[in-house]
Length: 222
Image (tube, rainbow, N blue to C red):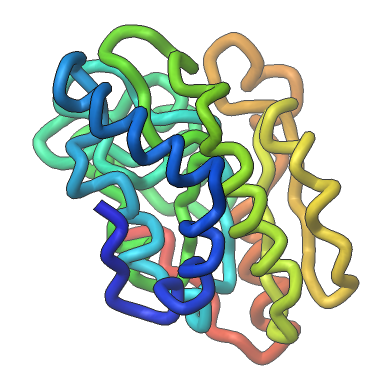
């Protein structure tokens, strides 16, 4: 379940030999065998498969995968077709329309096109038990994804880190390189979106920064 086909393979190979990761792997084998776990095992590392280290220029950091059926597929906030956008993603699309005038519909909730442009859609916890949010929040994933953030911080090329909500913002400690740009706001969840997510203009801010640095902006629409 950890076969990478790009430069993440070499970058993370030593991390995957660490005792905590070996314990995590053993636990996951048992969990997938005995419990309903999302996403499918082959989708756990989709964010890394779709977005190499070299090509990463934006990170959108989520917490843990969706815990309902037909939702999680290894990309933060994204759901595969034909699943309709969950509430947080609907609010992301509302802000996208307000910010850039780009409309993505409820039926256009697969964000793989973002990932393929260099947007790393990374959750800090990569698996979850069905219908039990954050059930895998303390099994070791945080060490692994913190390592990913630390590696990205070392990039010379500028990276935009989009941190929505308290959990994502707590990871700011890993982003110390002045070449990078942090965009942060409350979470797009219906519980918090009105506290400052709406009107935060993350998409235009991100693209303005990328263009200032001579990088191609992200095509947020189809």
